[in-house]
Figure 1 (cartoon, rainbow, N blue to C red):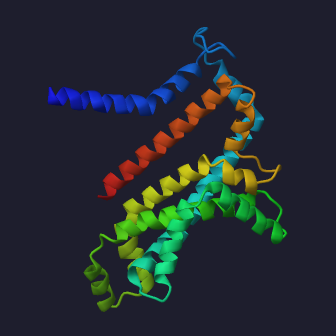
Figure 2: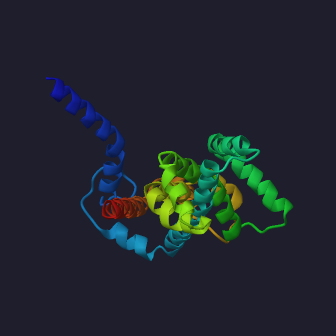
Figure 3: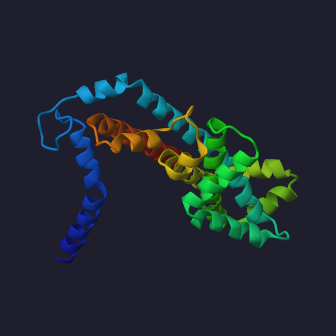
Length: 255
């Protein structure tokens, strides 16, 4: 009886989490364009999606920004986490606290502040401003994720490497990075997800010449949800699942 209750509880949790995704995927194959009633099975919305150049361009822009910002944020966040873990310096607690302040700050506040800064600097809104905004958004999450991984390190390994003549770069490259790889991958995936589905910060920091997918979808669903949007969402879910599966496999091989 106890096992049945646990299984039922777990089943309800999974249904709550994944039922909306299943419904959305099912309606991406619905022949009806506007009605939620089932009108038959079809693949035509995926064909229409492939011919929708504006939507595909926005998807490519989003993937470019997400991959680039996640990579840059991983580099900066990892170095920041390593510095906070290994060194004791004046203002360390302030730097550490500022990371959590950025994580807790509402997106609309970050977006407006970045917009004011870009306009004050005379920068045209577009790819570079959006990239810098997403890197700013992702760095604190990467630093916090990797820092938690660094906290479990055995510092005697690093000290032994230094005693044997290893430089700071060699210690970081050959010891710290391999040991922190699970945290790096987790931080990269988290940054990729945050960047890919961000709406508010993207709204304030991008221009009309560089449209990203969340803003494009937002402008489309204001007039009603179309099946080609569902089809695109299914493809994005597949990309996410593939990325997570590959990361899990890489971590397993590394272990």
